Amino acid sequence: MSTEPTASAPTATARIRLIGLGDELLAGAGDPRCLGWIGRAIASAQGSRSRADLFTAALPSETSAQLADRWERDVSDRLDADGWADGSVDHRVVLGLGRADVRAGISLARSRLNLAKVLDGLERQRLSAFVVGPPPSSDNALTAGVRELSGAFSDVCSRRRVPYVDTVAALSDHDQWLEDMRSATDDTPGQTGYGLMAWLVLHGGFGAWAGLEEPASA
Image (tube, rainbow, N blue to C red):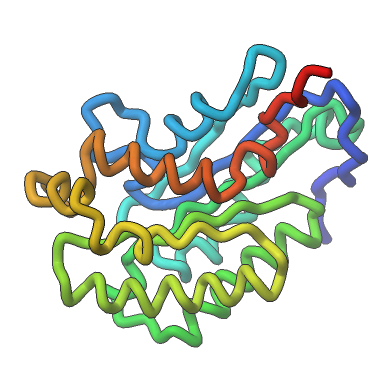
């Protein structure tokens, strides 16, 4: 039996708490500024009256199977139990999916099931999700597999009406991304690459989903 408190509807003045789960790209590995895409996206989206607290749990080279095994524990550890129960803290979960399923030889069907397990679990707990797909690799053969993986992830999200940002489709032929990855180590982008990912996330509706976009002045 779950011991989690029952979430109440967020109040108009609820504090926003974003919980991020993902791999080394969520942690900003390879970024000299240590912001990654999620730090840049939040910094750009939040205003003076709409601010969020970010708590991340990144696992290097994480597969979807590992994410499916750990998500509930790591989300629970980052919840404000009292704030969640009384609606004073509005919790939302960001998933940064990586390329590890391709490297590990996990089938697309299994990858789909793993992500579905996570999203369905979050839905049962009434936690809104926003999903960012894996970006291109510096290895063209790996990128081909990532395209198929991203397509599978996108379909899972679409069926559940969960926002999904397909980074591999947008960046595979992007000159600035390719240039950034040529000088990358460990197949991680630098400042330019993370900036491009953040731009895609923001234009994928992240600010509105996270409740960070301030209403226009009358």
